[in-house]
Amino acid sequence: MNTVLFSLGSNLGSRLDVLSQATLLIGQHIGDVVKKSSVYETSAWGINDQPDFLNMAIEVNSKLSPLEILEQVNAIEKQLGRVRFEKWGMRKIDIDILFYNDMVIETLELNIPHPHLQERKFVLIPLNEIAGDYVHPLLNESVCKLLDQCKDELGVKLCKTEVI
Image (cartoon, rainbow, N blue to C red):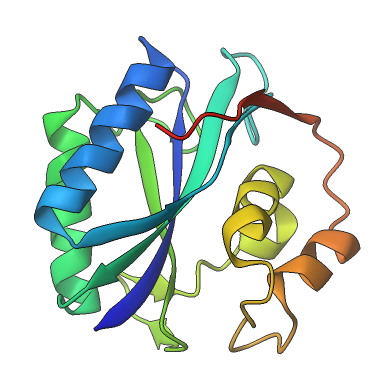
């Protein structure tokens, strides 16, 4: 069984419902969702002139390979109405694969660990809640330590503590 950590975000539509639907579909098509963080609200990163995001992290036990997971993630995003038209633009759902066990994968279609997770508090704060001791295989630092070192100044506030 493989441990996969994901970041989920939404800033269009009924954001909380979209995160809930994404979590459910991941559980149906990728593997057992074993941990879920609280939901956090943050300003958009990259392009500021758009609605705030809701973000969360989940841990999944999966039998799928990284490429099979990427294929399922893309299908789930499409099913939930994601349209890719602008990098860092508004989106109904964004699902990022942060870690897959302690593997390092660098291809044109997939990078694991996610190459920018250590720069983004909206990823690190929910991830720290469910996997603070998880060690980044390239940076050799725990998620908790990466959060302490993160210079991202975007505000991230707790939105909902109930697990979806």
